[in-house]
Length: 205
Image (cartoon, rainbow, N blue to C red; front, top):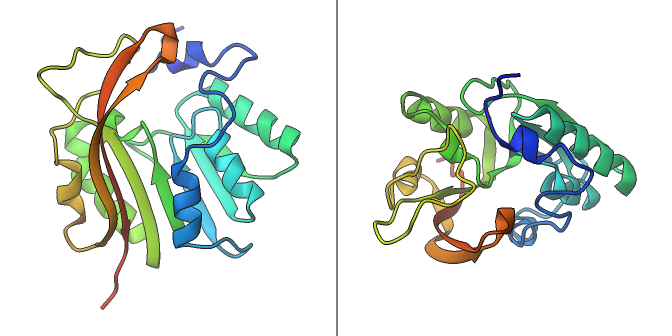
């Protein structure tokens, strides 16, 4: 079988590749946009669902998609185990289309799967899909000449240039923006990443 991403294989087993604890950024988003049942959240590239399910546990109406069948299968399994319901389905960051608007949109470790020719359209789509005063959280791996390519770097991933992500949010109110180098042990091999992160709010004049 031809697959677009190695994560389809890495997500096959019963264990969760990334674990089941939510990312620390989730609580930051919650503080910026407190939950209620009428607030909608979208997780772009949800993997096995740990962050999306945590957000659903807090009371949001959550949708999530990932390119991997195995990721969505395990997302729905984990949601059932945690007693929450989310709208989780297979889709592609390069081609997805939604007519809804969301209070929070986030994507972690996925934007580097965007093909160059789709970047501008993707960020225009994000702006259209974000409600007024809504929050967007995006991070992306960036290239540094002194860092080696991670051992679990995937087929269609592509490093971004430092600061490139931030140029797409010039008209948004920035809540947090940073660039960090951190240690990672995913895949069982110690390595380092450089990541740019932005949290911003859509301001409508």
